[in-house]
Length: 238
Image 1 (spheres, rainbow, N blue to C red):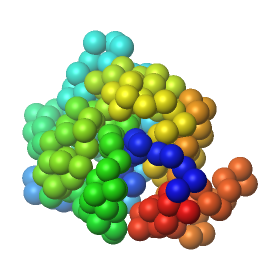
Image 2: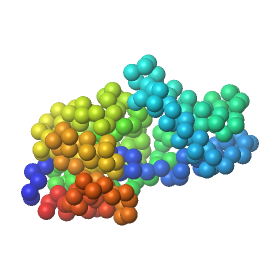
Image 3: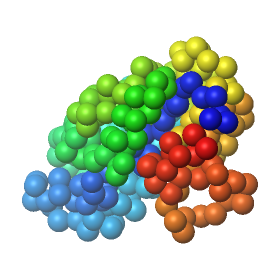
């Protein structure tokens, strides 16, 4: 093969796993279980607003400011419901705790098509593999529950490492763990800036998972674009 790759690193959300249902729908079901009717679309908008504000004030789960990711998420969930007009703090806390634990389980996540097979084939071919994800410390458990954990030698989350993609330090840590120089590594992810560009900035190869018709960044050569995960090995082994 042209690419002498030894290490493959993977993004998780919307690359290997996706939410089974939109956040607004899951939150609306939780509210309804407690007798409160809220429109899923409204909750979805409230969630994006609450999440965005929390991320600006406390980046990377507030890790540099003494928050735990659990507290970070509980605050986001409570604020989401507040923005949708719910204010009983006792109920908000109960819902936030339930949702925090729920999003830790395979009940809310599904494996993307082709992921199991592609990861298995990559391991059979002898690649070292790891995860680089802007996720909190629930990720390892989620990957275990979704039967993906065994594919990876290491799991790097931005919460554990203290740096979030596109910061080069999280990629450099992955290269150290994998024991390879950047030109022998490739990163696979769905975000142009945080995955594709960030990996290339440290000298790694990278592939952008992008369904047909998604935003076309002109800087991505077609041989770096994966319409599905199943296209990966053909591109690597060209």
